[in-house]
Image (cartoon, rainbow, N blue to C red; front, top):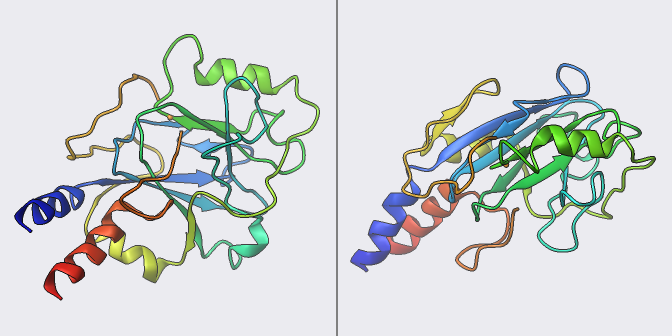
Length: 207
């Protein structure tokens, strides 16, 4: 019981990283992040954008496993719902907007991306040669949450602005430098933010 409580306390200090999707044209702002395991990434979607993760080797294409997809903008209640993803590994994650020619036009981003080799500039350059971006069939790897649902996350986590880097205080740290694979966590459903899991865990302990 004590061990469970200590684990939940650690989760409370996870950071929230905000990303603006399409607010200023074909951009993710910031374009790269450095989250730690347990942190939460919140994508604020603007008309008519979306976000899809995929491997470096296949730009503008979703991955076979662990891919996240926000779904179409039409499912966000005109942008009032944000797409929320829980960071469960320190692996590099690349993502793109699958609308029209947005990805080939450079609308890509990522977290825990190396500063050389497979960096974000190389991913963007490779995307430029793609003629058509692919879109998964349904929302995956995260949740669409409105502001009231997000309140439980931000109330228990430090938040970073869309234009800057975060300062997470959790013990996990990325293994790569620069700015970010998302896989499911056996301890919680895929896409459930760490801070939200904290609230559920505390309730379970109280009961």
